[in-house]
Image (cartoon, helix red, strand yellow):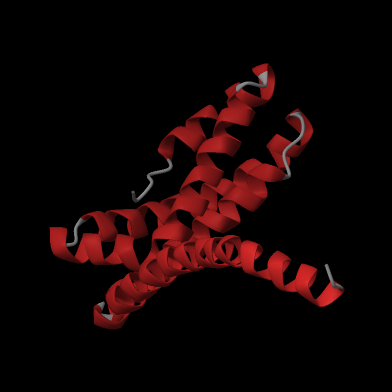
Length: 152
């Protein structure tokens, strides 16, 4: 059998597999594009004030998460508490504003900012759990962490 014939046979028997494997990433891409399309559509129809409130919420909670991530012991907790206390009230006002939206606008905001909301909310929950598991540090931060309201 010539080299050309072997190559032709190899390619012809591998072709269905190549088509199958080439189609798999396209399915994943399609899912992410559909999700992006929904987020883009929701974002474009959100009132500017709601969009700004959601962005501010995400930024402030991200700042809280960064502050919490820097806490390693009682000394760093004590240094961080005043800064956290300053952010909690404005953050909670943003949360209250988002929670006061109509059900339709809340759903649009969740669709538009879903991944970002999931990231900051999960980040806060993880940091809060981590710090709460530290006996002395957790008790120092408990009252501040308990006051944080999340928009979900």
